[in-house]
Amino acid sequence: MTVFFKNEANDSILKAFEAEMKTSKFVKTSVFVTKEQAAKQHIEDIGEDFMAFLGTNPLENSFDIHLNAAYIVNDSIQKIDARLRKNEMVSDIGYDKVLVNLVNDNIQKVSMWILIVSGFLALVAVLLINSSMRLAIYSNRFIIKTMQMVGATKSFIRKPFIWRSIKLGIIGSVLAVLALIGVLFYLDANYPDLGIGDDHLMVGLVLLAVIVVGIFITWFSTFFATQRFLNLRTDDLY
Image (tube, rainbow, N blue to C red; front, side, top):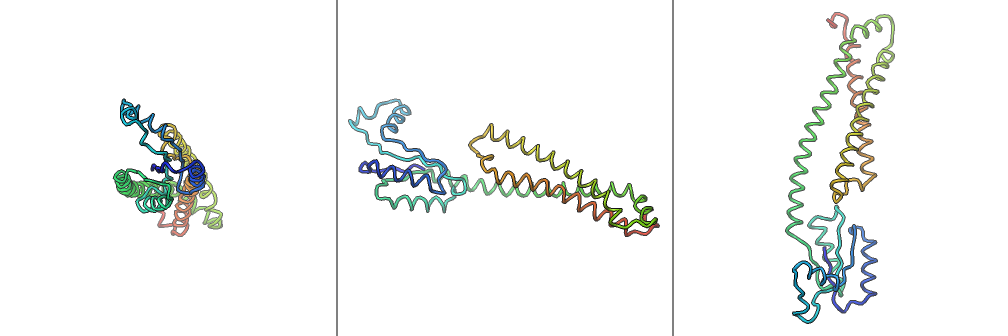
């Protein structure tokens, strides 16, 4: 978003606006561009000195404002536009409305498909983990029933199986976290404009959630698998 100022705007007005931008939540970065700098850039772009033809510099001082990702939606941009236009020294505000609409529409479509695919893959992962835990317990069903017949309590029998599954869950979760960290570093190095690694708190919460969920799934599957065989009659084991 580019905010143009009238020629009557003095240095104090421009500095006050710059200070306001630095404290605004919707602003990621803001750069002040003088009309001389804008003219120089324009000459480089068109390859011709337009000021020699016009005899003056018609451009204005401006601020190039980069918005935070959360505010790059139509409603938010319109509110920001209306707020900035309240400044009497602002002559015009420019941004690509068509591009904003296109980006928002595409993000919604892509996000929906990513959600569907991620949900399907998560369901497959849970089913695979659950099946693996059940098979591991199934192979030890006679040991479980033997321990139960000699007087071992259900909690005592479940304990080693649950601890083993938790260890497997931790190992799997750590490997998944390392893989995610590798992907994040790759994206951050090759696509720095995405700013994926900027929100350290969110990244940390996601990685922590992966570990917690990995441990919980293995514990949950093992607990109910052992409980099932503990409640079976001896004849049903066959």
